[in-house]
Image (cartoon, rainbow, N blue to C red; front, side):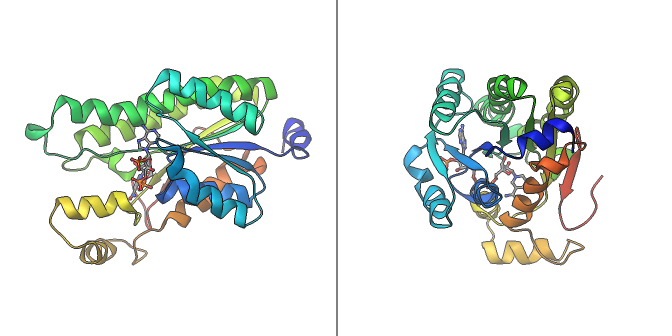
Length: 259
Ligand code: NAP
């Protein structure tokens, strides 16, 4: 740990996890709270954050529900101000909010393209730009961006693949620009994780979710599909004090190698 890292251990970190009402984001929020951070549980609908906030509180942690649209500049500005006022200056950011609008290229609409770019890329950009001020002031920060194995290309996901590849470029650039201020930026690229998102994919291709998971697991060296806690565990490491010399990396969490 650097001297800055060591000094910071004494204070409780404030983390923001976007898209944390459910799925991977909820698991990350609960894990970071268990790690000792005060966590802003941010999602489109503030009321939808209640289950994650309640789970954190029940486990003895501190959490704040924040309703915000990460793709909207003013909404992001308001959300960061609410977090700073309610919990303190945020120095850990997990850009997890995401949507899919899958379709083959010839059927993909401009709205499908823009919506996916808006939440993933514009959202991560707006959040990182707003939170970096607090990180730079603190001389410390951890940014974790959710990419995907789809960044390597995936049929029916021209928009999502491009966005998730873009998350990797954004991550590396944040690492280059913010490193001197004690801020790391890394990306997690999950493979198949069982959530509402993958359940929606199963529905789109006309398969039952259990059948879809079984067929996918057969293709994974680890012999199973992922669960949100697999990603939360990785995020916990990247957001930790001790990971201060890990930056600009993309970690594939997919039960096997990806390239
Ligand atoms: P999920 O279950 O669909 O949850 C995504 C969350 O993001 C939802 O609570 C959603 O809110 C929220 N959200 C959507 N748009 C938002 C916006 N504009 N502002 C704020 N919050 C917004 O998805 P997940 O499977 O947990 O995925 C989480 C992240 O991991 C995503 O970035 C996804 O692309 C990535 N990922 C997932 C997998 C996988 O296999 N599941 C694999 C690779 C990468 P609403 O409920 O209101 O829509």
